[in-house]
Length: 282
Figure 1 (cartoon, rainbow, N blue to C red):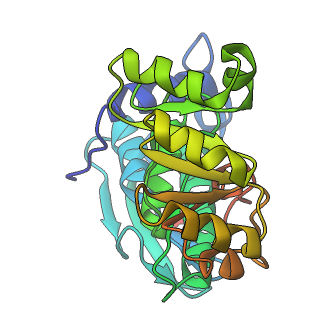
Figure 2: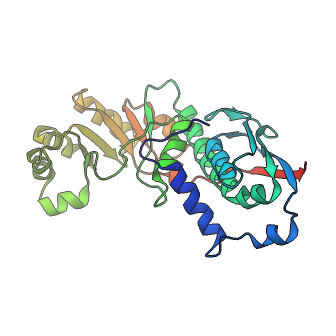
Figure 3: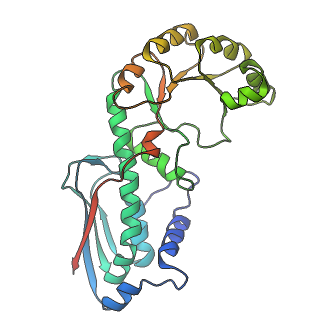
């Protein structure tokens, strides 16, 4: 298996997740008491409704962590859209090990595929507009790298991995600095290369640009206001629409001429995909 995400330690994630499930004694008491030590299982993971798949290599890592000699076949590719009823992974090996790894593997694929699937709906909704879907920092603590991986599998572009890779000046920063121009000037003086500025009103655009903003986040503006803002900016910096974006509204927002639309709900509110994993004796 060749799988990596920048700055993500897969082995550490797998070990920590299994340790959480196995407790202080490192035991799956049900499998140890019910399943014979030499029993072998084969299993198939399948999509129970239409989904975009994400996380199968991580599921493989869970199984291999407990049975290094198990056989795992990934039946579809990461980011692939599949119909309900499609088999997406098969595994065979020691029954106890596979049962112990089952929930961790399944939870991960369900969660990441849910994010990828919802993301794809938003991406499809703005197809042809020229706008690009961005994700946000609205992720479950500790799972950001995985969740942002899933949005990529769904077709979104990662935006701001954390507080360290770009400045984002929002209303609370402006309130302390005194005004939007002063907040931006302080970021410029600090030598920050990428300065994203949230603007709630069109009147804030020129002061932000004059002070050195490199990217504008047009927050909670309707399509008509967004069109006016994009015209005012005139291509000087990228424009991103954000705030309350839904599947019903994103098309009109994207058609306003913005470069990007960011949607927090693709990570914050994505339901888990319905994926099953059934075993039988080998």
